[in-house]
Image 1 (cartoon, one colour):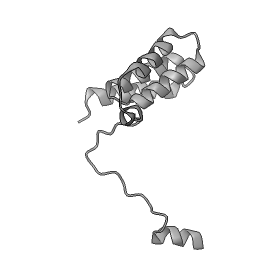
Image 2: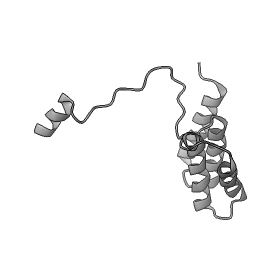
Image 3: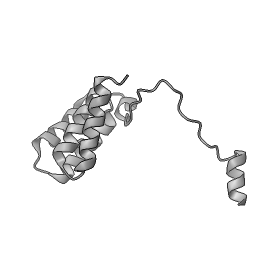
Length: 105
């Protein structure tokens, strides 16, 4: 069952998808990302909002807020939050049989 944070991310993400050039939608999405501690993604969207509207106090305040937080490098680099308990999918290694077959095709 999805929790409130997941619903919020999905809702604001969908709204942003409908209006990707709207700085307020970027700020809404960034606010939601902050709530789930996806600080890197929040900073990215506040910055995008600043690029779209350099006069946006909300966007500038958001950037300043994230930059002012006492975060580790790992926290600052959080761009994704998963609610799944499943393991991440296996990645194809360069030296795997499949990769070699693709090279020889």
